[in-house]
Length: 322
Figure 1: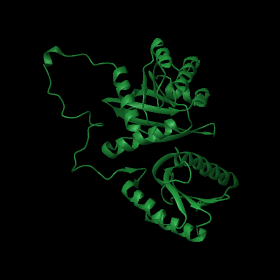
Figure 2: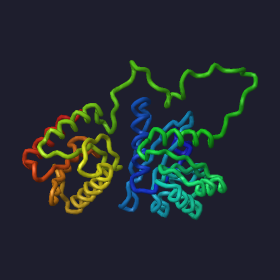
Figure 3: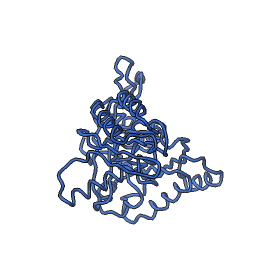
Figure 4: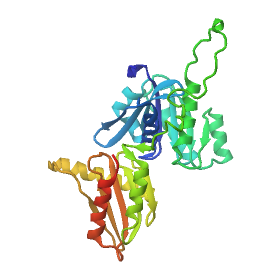
């Protein structure tokens, strides 16, 4: 379908990775079933990674555009969201969601018509906060886990369906037999059809095995496999640090180093990045041959053999199923 015919939905997050992580998950889920998803990255003013996903949501073809508040002032946003009729606000708290709503309402000339706003927050709103949203006619949903993308997506899909124009009924057509499942893009596959879960081309069962191998390394405290384009954790184990925060932070480290290499004209791949702390080693290793994926390992400095650990991380990288 022509992109101009797609319903536009703006996914506005209150953090740098919230909307991008969600869209990465949506693309992964639908691509594994329908193979109809395109994910594109647009470089805005050389400083932002913007994502948009073309997807069928409950029978409505639409384009989900992910952004953060600072992006609303960028000229490219107008072309992407000019005809937006629905804005989903993703925030940690209802207070942060209200700030996003105020920002959207004050964005001059960004939308052709005033869009409908729907807020999803991960913290339970107070009665006073809920009453503010009710008074302004903004639906407010609470999802206890900010990483529960399945639940967040269901709220978004329901809002898209509710906001979509309803086709006129043909009285002469008579009642139709209801479908046994949802729309083709959302219909669950049968057990015989269910593939091994994958994301960004990584076999997740294999990823879990790889992390188990990482934890056998002397001094290993925790590890993860993540997508540095969005900061989304694909698999994790152990501890030593907050691994979700580490995934987002180290994603920025990799992207910053890659920009520096481009500025220096270095046409080489990053093998690994080593960060030495007082009590820990942190190893960051991009996966060769799979752009966007990296392995991260936290080691106890007193117990680890650094040379051996780097060698084993390299072996784990080679063993990842692509």
